[in-house]
Image (spheres, rainbow, N blue to C red):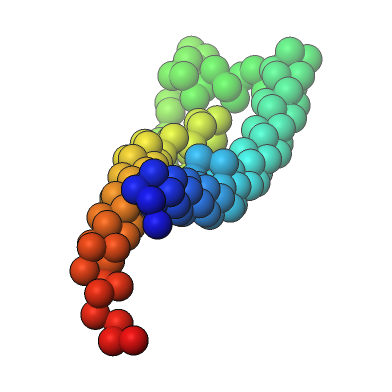
Length: 146
């Protein structure tokens, strides 16, 4: 086999390996698609939770606009009181939400590093194939014994 043909074969094998690696683990590969689908699902849940909070806040706003008792209760939470009233403060335990609403999920930065590793692996394989074909050409066919 001529050196140019071996080089082309090694480059083709490297390109084929790179394409397969990109299909499964690349930026637009199967693994990244699953990550993006999970991210989309979390964002949809986040939007639904934000809509619920928005509806609750709209109801609270309407009650504060039109109900005198609601205004008075809200003013007491800020420390305002009528003359002669004595505030009684009771400790209240409130559970924290399991996640923060309204924030975006942090972007994964390791993906760029993984892509560089995959490309380096494909390059190393093509170089190894080229070197192996040169060695096989030089030493391998002489020891066949027929």
